[in-house]
Length: 74
Image 1: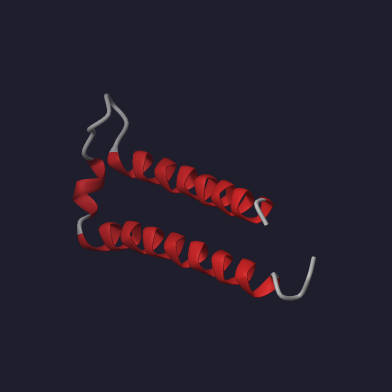
Image 2: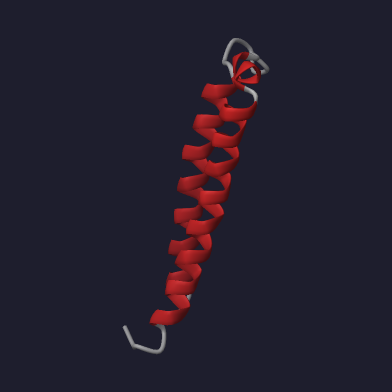
């Protein structure tokens, strides 16, 4: 890998990292501000806490794929 490509990959990686931090921070803000809301069951028996947790895991996977595809295109 050439050294001139490293800053771009680092910037992309950091941008995706901070996006995930914002998603996780939003989830934690919901836990702190409205813990009663997490017991709501909008998805047929699965409460919002479980659905949001699975959403965070899925978003981490999606962000990893975005990074992988973006880096492969260089």
